[in-house]
Length: 88
Image (cartoon, rainbow, N blue to C red; front, side):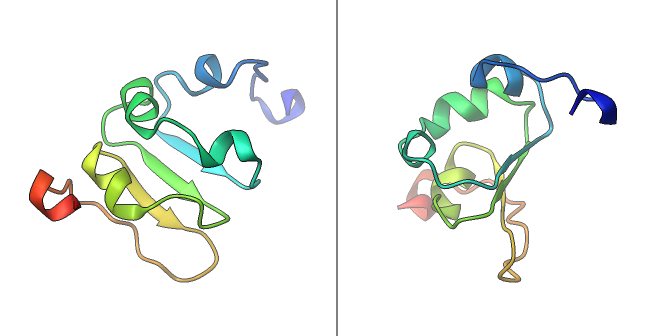
């Protein structure tokens, strides 16, 4: 990772702070129960969440202001932020 110009982090929240994109390419249980509201607040406003395992609900991501893309199945990026009534 360092050789590619990235700085590895041992802490998930520190590593995602202020980032524009968060990519999940593993289906570890710790990520399945992730607090998406906290993640959205930690990332840059309007960040893109790329879901490689279909672990997250696109409407829940949108409800917290995250754009969502399910990698590998052709799902388009969800750019809109849903209202509370649309998200349920």
